[in-house]
Length: 327
Image (tube, rainbow, N blue to C red; front, top):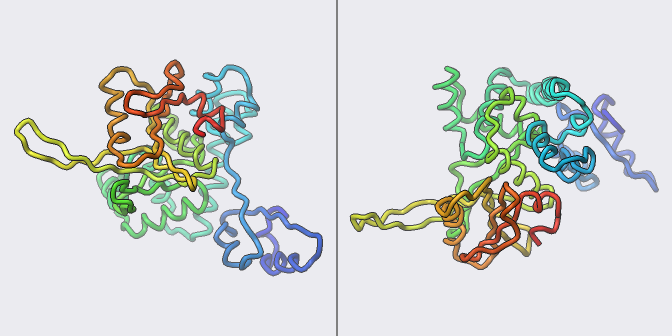
């Protein structure tokens, strides 16, 4: 049953189907009327969610074929919405992404939540699109609005807007986790886009930093594989040349849980020298446990080896195209 929200009293209609033998009912509809959390509320254990994501890279590559690097470039730029892969020109892809965002994503969010400030929501999405890979929180976003956009929006409103965007599957939140303290830190989170084509369209295909886009792709891929993904923080102590001890927090890009397994992952586009290598290793080697530590590397000529610190190096190509690359 498609567009089920157009049926009057559709919840009662669907509940009536549960009394019929030999019937399974699959339902899709507009986010403006029917969210996954409504399934839990309305159907009380008699319904469940089948989460549909944009195409993973391996699915996208199976469809378009050709050169791996060209396919990955297009995936980084235009994302994994299936129809995008079928369009021939850049202009067609851009126009489609603009249309689907305006007429489906944004419209559903505004209508469902009866937003009185749709322009504020639009600006928020653009701010998030500009800072993928960076930790932020509602207070930081409020300051950004005041300094850059000259708009005043309360932190509580921003918090509600962030929840609306997650409900509509536009963004996902990765919370910060204190690895040594084994607890969540509520001060800030990272927000990644479910589809990079939508993200890039929102900022007019500017800010195409391979490092941040690669990080977003890794996050989405880990979630597709059923993992729970957080952003890690590791506390270390440093001694200054004057002999003073200072506390410093290092970031682990991803703390990945897939019980009973855990792994820690750093995303690095390139390890061009020893200094860069040590910088990426440092958070990992300061984690006081024996779970696997991995660096996923954007270039493919350094792959499949373990360095002197016991950190595994996996190429982005292997990670994306071989589902068991991290096994």
